[in-house]
Length: 365
Image (cartoon, rainbow, N blue to C red; front, side, top):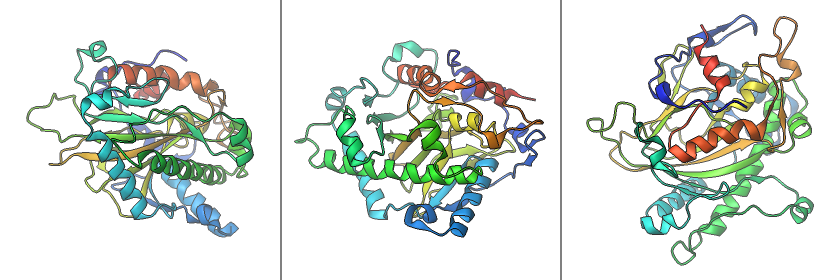
């Protein structure tokens, strides 16, 4: 893949425009301009539902992915107590002394990323995002037999004496989160008129990287004009799940180019499409611009699961998303190569870049 585009005006978006998304003649669709995210009940896939219920959930997911690429998910299988507990674990971690967190600085995709990234000097002309993050290594939903064959991922863990119970809790929470991705893969396949096993057969199992996010309060009067808790960006993988607290601060751009607030809704998770899925669906499903601004008077914590196939998967246009009047818009890409340069830039500089394919899509007139 080409080098990741440096963020530059990405935070300002003078040259980026969502409005082209509203009507797409090649796809024969008209995207609705939403003022709030739709709610999709995914329980027929999580708890087991009949064909009609699964079809209904898949259709609702399809429309959300077309209109804005984001939705609230309910019926996901996580209790309020579980979500509250994982957010509390994040608060415990980020409250550790900075010296303790620095001993866990990211290596090989796992560990702590401080404000400004791993190399703040690499981006001195840009204001760093005001956030800290703690990554766990990628995990896949494996059977017991597969677990005996595949080596466990290498995580970095805080000392048990500093955070008793943290490791077993996060291990169990990650396993449950990754199991949910398999069910969402079934729903996404059905939403595209494919058999439910399509993505496992074509791309291998979806895997997830769990990330704790910490956002201190921002002061509108003192921050740089291009500074955010998390600069505007798209996600790079297949799709993302977000467990957020009650404060809010996440915003997404609708098809009219307006930023709308993703207000926390009890008992829901946030679901959004990533670049790899947008490429695979020929832009039918949109990987949309979003940002975080914590203009609250308290620290904000969220937990994100970034989902994608194995790094050796080839992402190409899905058969049901192309035709004589709508040929593939993108050449096939290797999943690992696509995300590698983008993640390297982000971790190094502390601000997200954007893929050349995505930049061209948002600059289309």
